[in-house]
Image (cartoon, rainbow, N blue to C red; front, side, top):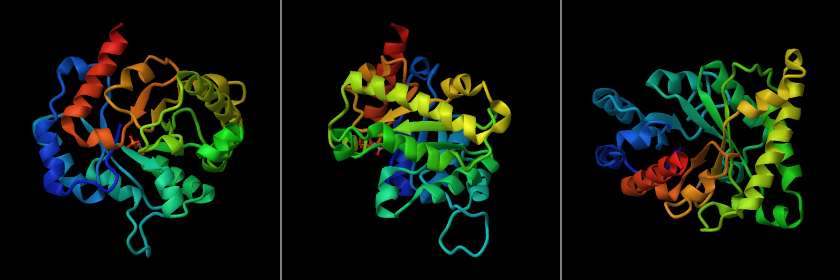
Amino acid sequence: MANWKSHKTITQSLDFLTAFQPSGADLKNTQVVLFPPFLALASMVQRTRVTGSLIQLGAQNLSAHNEGAHTGEIAAAMLKDVGLSHVLIGHSERRKDQNENGPLLAQKMARALEHGLTPVLCIGEQLEERQNHRTDAILRQQLEDALKPLDLSPSDSFVVAYEPVWAIGTGLIPSMEQLRDTAHSIRGILARVLAHSSANQRGQEQRWAERVPLLYGGSVKRGNAAEIMSLTEFQGLLIGGASLDPVHLQDILHAIATERAT
Ligand code: PGA
């Protein structure tokens, strides 16, 4: 999944689609979802429909409300109507810059699920929190805040993206051991949270938690994508900076496909 953040005009976004030509083999078992800025979404959906592209599109944010008197907000129904499949929720940049907090993120999760969009819930700790051995506590809090208020069922499709804040845009990534350990912690927390959020699924939560796709994000590049994807704990990647260049993203897809084939 590719988070373009606040990059690319409509023209630049369409140029990316023209240049981005991953091979059929690299796309065979890999879902590609691009998250461009809002203004480019409609044109990009149009273009992918015309060309029959398998690429899916998502939004980087959505309103916590349904349509109504909320100036400047973009509601889930509008995103669904334009033809999107996914939406990012709780990216650390929004948690910090827009003060997005747990109750707000739970509302956003609810709006996305109600409208058939797959939310990608982003969680992650700050460097200081990791150094103080608080990673699990932070991730638990973030998952509980966003998911516990919801009445989830196993048919609700959502994705969790683990993005340590200190790894985003810094060139640093956790060690493979840290990634493996953190992924196991997330699955355990998820199982406990899911047990709370759906009364009629007691006993099933472990298997349910195992089925939630877990992505890694933070300084993913073509040089480290294969190694991260060699960890069976993660089902995909959330890529920022490196996804802006069509050739880099193609190389990452190729690295993933090659790793999966071994
Ligand atoms: P990065 O960003 O790949 O540039 O580190 C990842 C993200 O913020 O989703």
